Image (cartoon, rainbow, N blue to C red; front, side, top):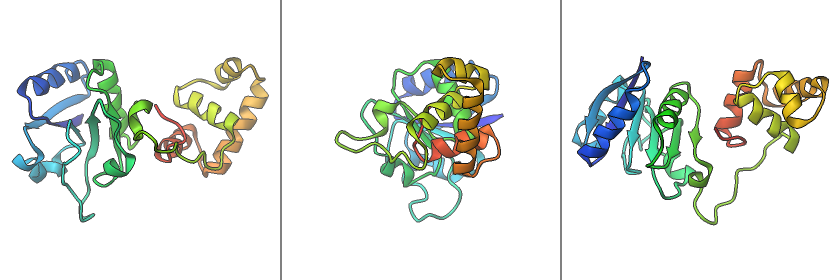
Length: 196
């Protein structure tokens, strides 16, 4: 069971989130707070994911303790540097996100992935993350791996042979020091080379 804490100033927003997340039997609402300072910080070890509309959670600013994953609901671009101050695992989605998007984000965050809407991940004028060690084609393959496609499907999607798709996947594993698809995708997401 994934334990979620809702931190939002509006009772209507918290009720809406509770309703949207209720569609997923793996998610349970562990608590609700108007502000992080209302006591939510005391129970942070008891939750897996915090969903909030605020970028001022003020938790673990000294780097002590284990912070839960944080999902920010924003309509304005959110700097990765701001989010990373409080949690190594975080995501950002628009306020009008659907139930499916919210539930998928909570599940991904609970697995240690970073998720978000690309248009909200960076501030205006901020550059895109460095592509890292992967080629453009390898990034395309990694994005398809993240979508759960099999080698044959990746080959069809990119118009290449299955043998070539396997070659790219092997190269990705080697460059990212990964032994399977999950590790490769996690590394790609953590470093910002791909987005869910």
